[in-house]
Amino acid sequence: MKLGRIALALAMAFAVGSFAGAEEKKPAEKPKYTEGSCCDKASKAGKECKHPCCVEAAKKSEVCTKCNKPAEKK
Image 1 (tube, helix red, strand yellow):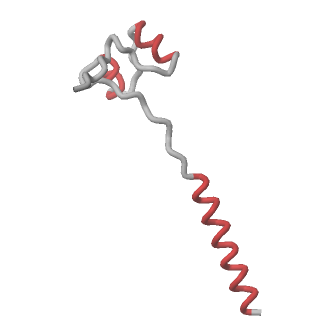
Image 2 (cartoon, rainbow, N blue to C red):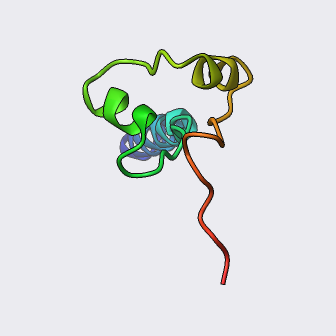
């Protein structure tokens, strides 16, 4: 009888552990804004940038390259 309870407890622990691991997903990464850009300032204020070029880029799930210059590669 004890062996059955131990086996049941182990099975339940394994099942709970596998469900908990399945739920751990990385949140969608937020776009990286250039420090000091209009998008960065709006994001820090908890808002979205209202510049037309930034709004168009956001619709495409991108970051405006006009306002957020990509880092230069060495």
